[in-house]
Length: 253
Image (cartoon, rainbow, N blue to C red):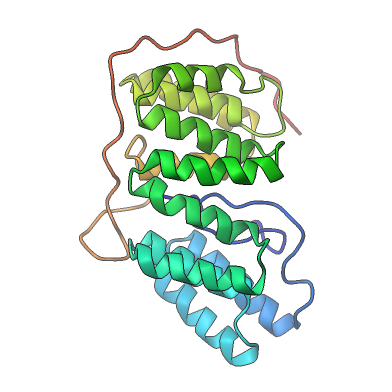
């Protein structure tokens, strides 16, 4: 489970959503940086074989880095080679102990395996260091929602900010609806969020909906191949969704 997209040089690849931080490639040669960017782009297109081939080539230009190891780890997690992915993330952290994407990926492994309590513990530790990170807030909320802890999920939902620079508000309410079998209402929340925010803002939040099977992944035909795994079954219950204020209708520039 991840939303691994590319916003060019400012973002990392990781098996959960991307995180905008300082450019990790700024200290490397142009050739090496371009290879990593191309690998990230291939990963975002789910062309994992090309992503790995580009990392292989990058490793001939420069010794493995936290970023390159993390790309390998992200691919392994996507292909459900979880132990290999975990080991690659750990290797990345040996090179850079504070490397956020690899730390995030270590939480994504139990998340995709349905071990939501374990994933939440890791996300919460990250949140202690990044208390304003709404992507972490969203993931923590999802752990409660997917384990059907209605009280904790509702409490987390109530804390989601109405005004934000991210689509967390819309996607949080969409997740609640989908998790309770209300796909029509869930899609309406998604549409509202996608109208307010551009794809560069929504991608980090939308991919989990594809992975859970709540929405079909655009252009994807699922097969039994290792690089093209089907979505997991979404959570569902008969609980009544909470009420929510009217969404923002002013499109951001």
